[in-house]
Length: 61
Image (cartoon, rainbow, N blue to C red; front, side, top):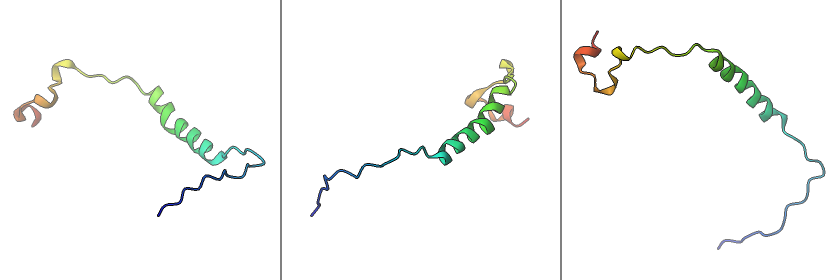
């Protein structure tokens, strides 16, 4: 048998902001986001692109 607890949790006295998740998010943004923004644009020659429909002779170069 399941018992549903409907009593409210006791109120916290101070609302603390967890700094570890915020620091991790900021570090990931800096490590991954900044290089992605500074990377040169991809150059793709449309004549060389065959997609998934390329025959095996073309892809064996």
